[in-house]
Length: 239
Image 1 (tube, rainbow, N blue to C red):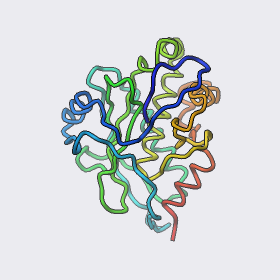
Image 2: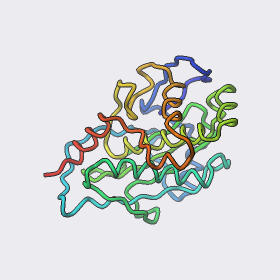
Image 3: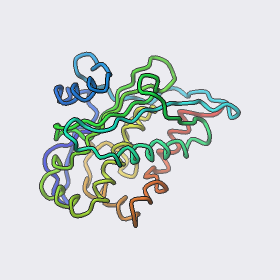
């Protein structure tokens, strides 16, 4: 998921997202190498696409492990952001009808690894699958720095810290969706919506923000559309 230019309140923007373009190599390399994870070939990221159904027995759910990094190299990520990433994982788990479970694991053993990256104003986040089989294995990076959204939105997220957390949470939710096998859609209602299809990007975040009274509400307001749920259940369909 990429940003494009400064976002003014109520503006309509087109963003180029998940096109496999080169990341800000130095920032991302520093983040991943510091975490002991190799940078992938050429510094490029390929967004995950939907896979054929992963078979999972109702009596033996697929066990997926995850690791969430502690912070970005310049400190823009907060310790509390790890909770947002965990809530995003749990939102997907709640909606697969028991097809998989999630369990925290050491970094090198985790199927899904999420890191915080900074110093790239064009990037919300991206995901890259690292496995070759049906089992979801991926590296996800998320940029928690709001300054890249432009002065108006930066000021809004400073005045309303919950809006800042909404943007970070929804970015985690979107990129983890890619990690689990979901592709972009052009439906504005979906968490997997691509900003490249146009639309009011500010409203995309504000509509979720209006559902919350406090930060803890994020844990129970998934942000997934009915179509997102249908797609994840199709990917992890029961035999």
